[in-house]
Image (cartoon, helix red, strand yellow):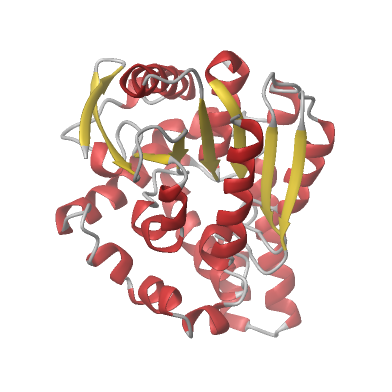
Length: 318
């Protein structure tokens, strides 16, 4: 673990790997959720091929400190922090460029930074790309409603209709996320095949919570910081999120793009991400489907995920 100052704010990064001469892979999670405890188990093979850098952005996870400033919690500032962190990593490891990976809402950040500074990056790996936050929420809502009716699930139908369709007022946001998240998960829109995954060692660790409670890098106190940071991120950035539409705001970038999409993802709906992939311009782009995954392809299909990332590193980073 290493403490860095980005944009004048203390933030924590964790660097993992076996060879400091390997290419750098910077991973940015979404919505303030820390995913190192998951990826350090499901995707540890990447550490043989990359210097893997996990970063909890300002005000989230291990970077959540007393009284974070919501005025500084903007996408523009986070993109500037990303640019600054990238330059710090390049200087420390004496490299010319790095790979960057964004998951879920983190993919909106990485798309913004590669648009701004393509000279710093070999490629952008967009995992479960978010395109339009409000449309994401609407598709997820409609999916829950349809599944509840199809399965005659009265409890789900009651809760989701009481909630109503998005968008939601900021003071109702976290309650809305809890209700939607609960039923998206129940109807396999977050993790597709929970039954099979639970029968694996990785799945047992994930669903029991052991990946987080027994993480070497995250203390018990850090788990509270993850929860607080998620709410801080979503409420602070909400006004920007409801205006976000990458299909209009970022129509081309200057680096190779790789979209990793879970076929059954309704948290960041794959249909919207696929449309964006078809439209966005770039020097090279490739769409990689994870047919047995929803929103967590790195956990649901880890072998394929690792193999595809390693192939990108070998092909692009030469």
